[in-house]
Image 1 (spheres, rainbow, N blue to C red):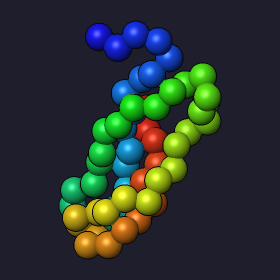
Image 2 (cartoon, rainbow, N blue to C red; image 1 turned 90 degrees about the horizontal axis):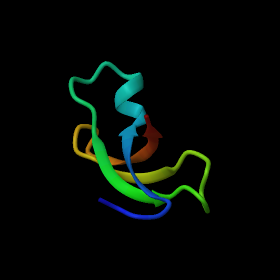
Image 3 (cartoon, rainbow, N blue to C red; image 1 turned 135 degrees about the vertical axis):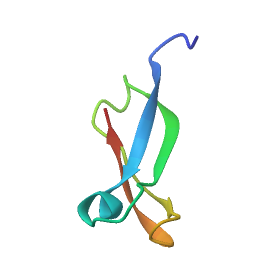
Length: 59
């Protein structure tokens, strides 16, 4: 169990979510809620789109 303000978050591909592609690319990582209270946005590789796309934090 992690101590302190670090929490596990999940990132989801926004292009897969908009288009009707079967399957959605998701990554899990950690972030510090104290220093970054807003939702995280990162460019990651999507295996369904076969390119780098924006992945946003989901709940």
